[in-house]
Image 1 (cartoon, one colour):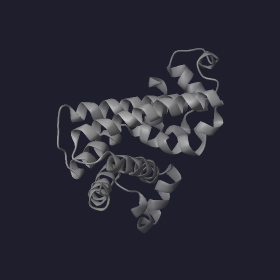
Image 2 (cartoon, helix red, strand yellow):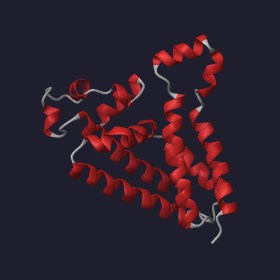
Image 3 (spheres, helix red, strand yellow):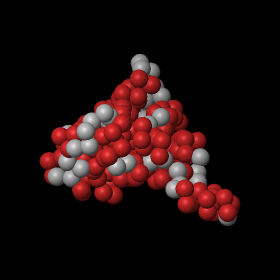
Image 4 (tube, helix red, strand yellow):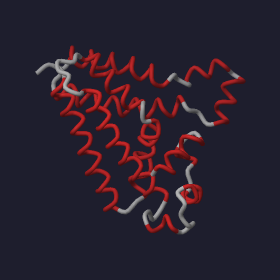
Length: 199
């Protein structure tokens, strides 16, 4: 997992990961990784599952024993903790597009079970620490995942796109500044949810 994550960070995304360099960096024989993962997709899905656990732990650590957080504060906690996990943000898109569908059903079931458990722990922790309702937090959680997945891809263009944006700067506006934009839109979303969703 550590080898795969470091390669993704170095190369600019999980799309560039292949099993051979991961195996080499982990100090295994080229066929050794097959003892643990049947495919690259299984490896990346495991990395995404690990990301869910890391995000859950980051949210709980950030919340501590805080109480009565308002919608802006909840949004800030969610934005800052997920932004601290760049490979997880990157994987959110790939999980939905391909990874879950390219592994055996039992492996997909395990991912769903564990990711939903982490999701629910995050929602419950925020529910206990904030003035928002469980329904509002669940809706904000959906927005976090959608924004993070989309914005991460846009704000980390491939080398070809980055070169294109240098040639035509007005197209480069789509290369968003990930963390500040995510936080700003999540704050607005959280405030809007509190105003529009009443018990």
